[in-house]
Amino acid sequence: MDGSNGSTQTHFILLGFSDRPHLERILFVVILIAYLLTLVGNTTIILVSRLDPHLHTPMYFFLTHLSFLDLSFTTSSIPQLLYNLNGRDKTISYTGCAIQLFLFLGLGGVECLLLAVMAYDRFVAICKPLHYMVIMNPRLCRGLASVAWGCGVANSLAMSPVTLRLPRCGRHEVDHFLCEMPALIRTACVSTVAVEGTVFVLAVGVVLSPLVFILLSYSYIVRAVLQIRSAPGRQKAVSTCGSHLTVVSLFYGNIIYMYMQPGASSSQDQGKFLTLFYNIVTPLLNPLIYTLRNREVKGVLGRLLLGKRELGKE
Image (cartoon, rainbow, N blue to C red; front, side, top):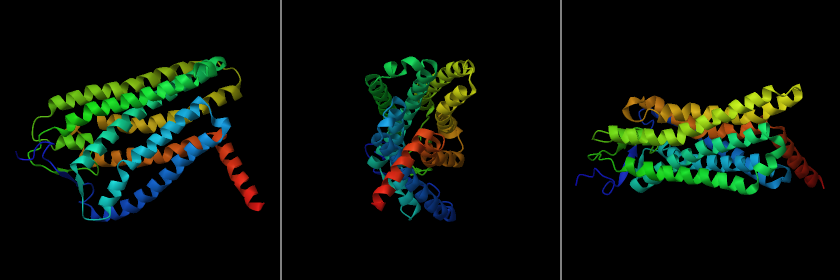
């Protein structure tokens, strides 16, 4: 055996940005700050949604899942990236690489489906407001969240082994900063046409199908909003969906570009920076988008902060 398959390969070398040592120092500082802010922002969203009874609604139930997802997603790869940026050691064990790939694919798939679930929640809220709490009952919310998590994990279970089992003929170097699917496919020493075709088909199911559902949901939402005669009512409906639409645009703008063209067809340097944006910038911006555009969250944060100040004075 030449170490070409997963059973004998013990480690990978994540090249990342090692060809640009000066950039590594800058990236380390920037990513560390962004990661800490991501932890604070998403943890705040989770705590606020859980602590305030006014936010115990379907929308914030799903937002809590999204924030937990973002926390898990960034933590699955950013600590390893910071370690690699801060020293000469760029290695990651085969087991560590497999776990990172599984989490990256699984959590990414969950987010696609969760954003579709959140679009359905907004559809019911705008198009069927009188029946909203009846339709979006706690049992249905838990069921939809479970389906999103289950399908995302199942997708990763299907895609990860296919990628990891590719023969590599002793190649250990991965031209990326994490064990990401297109980068691992490029290390193979055999034709990957069949694998890329399988990946594309699975990606259509997990990435594009939720996007189509989101677009259909918003087509009905737009039609319902246009039928609202009062300007305040129309503005409220638009603001209700604005945050979700912004998050969807950020998320899908990156993921479609990366995963609809796996393997050697995508630019390696461009792929690294797109993945970095998708991996740290999007989870960082999500809490800001939902807090800056949402009066309810800002109101709850204000009440909690004022409450702490009053207790401090006493």
